[in-house]
Length: 310
Image (cartoon, rainbow, N blue to C red; front, top):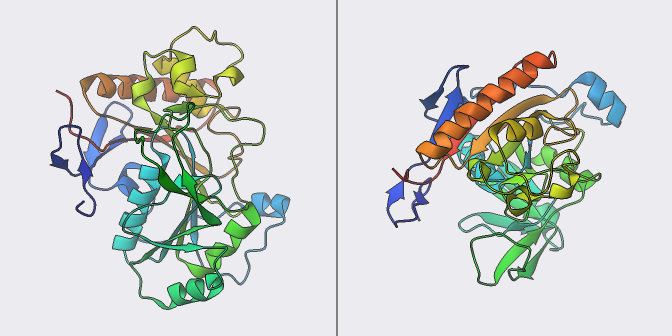
């Protein structure tokens, strides 16, 4: 597969597309970093001092490192690796990791904590020139699709087991950018977190909440992971733009454990005119929710990794 390209359902090639919400419409931009409103020339976002103090994190003396955690559902892994490619293109050393399980990616250097050369490989990575990507995990294991999995592949594949939070925190000593998939969703486009989720390490500066637009109009129990936590919604109901906005904005939903950190919303699967309309309506509901609850408007982005259906 060509670097940076994705394969559409009809087999043709297409560069991914990214959009930034202006308050009235989604405007196309060149990079996902631009769509999310993240600084592309420096590492200026700092973890709030109060948040660091509360968590007991010691960042003094460590190399400056951008730490981004990605939560929610519907495209987290694609988002993480797209950001990794963009940061590497800016000359950054990027480490990609997870607190949950992810498929072993093709075409990337992978180092596992259960390997004897673990620390040696990390040290070697710090000595490499910028523009490199390293994937880290606790260990590798076999995976076969289960009845509750919604992943498109049916074949047995390799999965990488996520690392413990304290282990992830140490990785920022070895890179310029640390990207963390901090949530699992069984391949479904929407998720409501359980009590122990998501796992956001104290050093995280930015949290990106993801959701898949293909969930709009579908039955909640069919497209939402942990739908039982939607206490006030009937299980036989459907996912609407308003409901999706509430999940993404709620501190009991995708925004859980974000605290005072910078928060971004990414609407993935913008694959056709239906999803575009759903994205616009969802963004408007998000803005309304922010105004109603006295919050600053959240930066909203959308992405498409396939040919449009129209």
